[in-house]
Image (cartoon, rainbow, N blue to C red):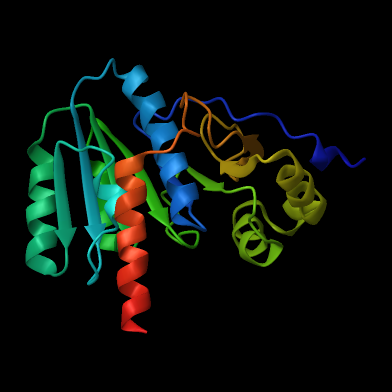
Length: 225
C-alpha cells in the first residue's frame, strides 16, 4: 500500500479558521454544518453569534435556514451584501459565519480575512478557487474529477499520487477527504480524512417538520413539471 493511503484523521481546531464544505447533496451539507457548528459552539463555549449569509437569486433552502441562526441574510444584490458585511463587522464575537450559495467574491473574502474573531464556513457544490481558505472538506462520495484539480493546485502534481485509491477507500468507510493547511509546516498543506457526522449525536433521527417541508417542496416541484 502506498504511503499516501495512510492518512491521519483531521483533528485541528476550526476556531478562527476559514473552511469550505463541498456539498454534493442537501443531506450531506446539513450533516457537515451540524457537525462542524457543534464543534465550534463547544470551542467558544456557545458565546458570540451565529450568522448565515446565503448569496444568490434563488431563496435559501429551508433545511439551511432551519438550522438556527442569530442573523440571516439573503444577499441578492450589492445593497444586501453591504448590509450583511456591516452586520458581520459589528456583531458580537466570537462569530460563527456560514456563507452558502455563491462563494464570496475576492473583494468580500479580503474583507473577511481582515476581520478578527470570525470562524468562516463556506458551503457549495464545488471547491472554491480563492487561496485564503485554510481547509477544504469533500464528502465520502466525492469523485476524482472534482477533487483532483483542487488537490493538485494546492499540493502540486506529486501530491496526488494514489488519490483515486484514497477516494475509493474513504467512500467504503463513509468518511470524507480534507485538504488542510492548518498548523502545517509545509505551506502547501496536507491531506486527511474526517467523519462527517462527528460531534452530532442522534443525527440519524428523523426531523418530521423538516421532512414535511422537504416533501412539500418536492410536491410543488412535481406539479410544475
